[in-house]
Structures are given as C-alpha cells and as structure tokens.
Image (cartoon, rainbow, N blue to C red; front, side, top):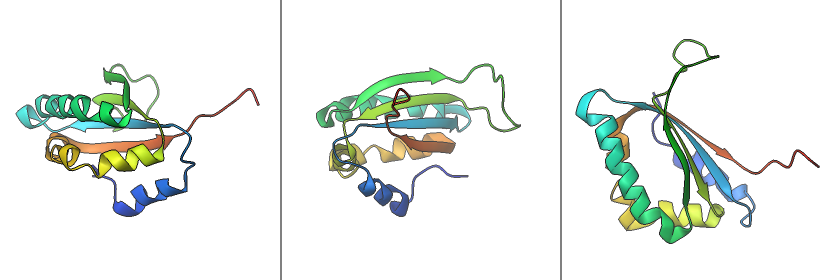
Length: 125
C-alpha cells in the first residue's frame, strides 16, 4: 500500500503556478496499536512546529466517521487538509532538514495514504 509520494510525483508540482496556493488532501489509514494514531499525533506536532515557517496552514484534521458512500476498503481513519501558500514553499518545506527529521513519524504511523494536490477552482467563472 502507498504511504509516501515518489520523487517523480513530487516533481510534477513544478508545473503548478508559483503564485497559487496548494491544498493537500490527506486520507490516512493508521497502523495498529502504538505505532499508529499515537505516533501520527507526534508527526502532527512536528508539522505544527515547522510548517508555519513556510506559511503552511493546517486547515482541518478530523477522524474518519460514518461512511455514507464508498466501496469496501475506502473508509479512512483520518482526513487532513493542509494549505501551502504556493509550490515554492511546498518544496522549501519538503527539503528543510529540520522538517525532514520527522518523516519517520509519519511513515511509521501509517499503513496507507492518499495525498492529492488540489488547486483553487473558481466555479463562478
């Protein structure tokens, strides 16, 4: 199961305009026991410490609840929406040594994840 993005997928963000925000949708499935949710909480604290230096806003973090429409296996333990001011700041954070020092907290806490980059959609236009 996928947990971490591949470098090629990360590099596709270079095609995004540098002056537009990115909202990253995180769908998360935790590992069992102490390696799961408790460790992910440590990763959240790590992100809250380092993300603001790069203009990152943590918009929403919620536990998965009642699934109204989904196929089997599509329920998630948590959803996290994170706003980056632009692709340049996203890359700066990913390559920051202090931030990278906490990657193990995320990787060790999950058994599966979906990370989907979203950009603003003006439906009024």
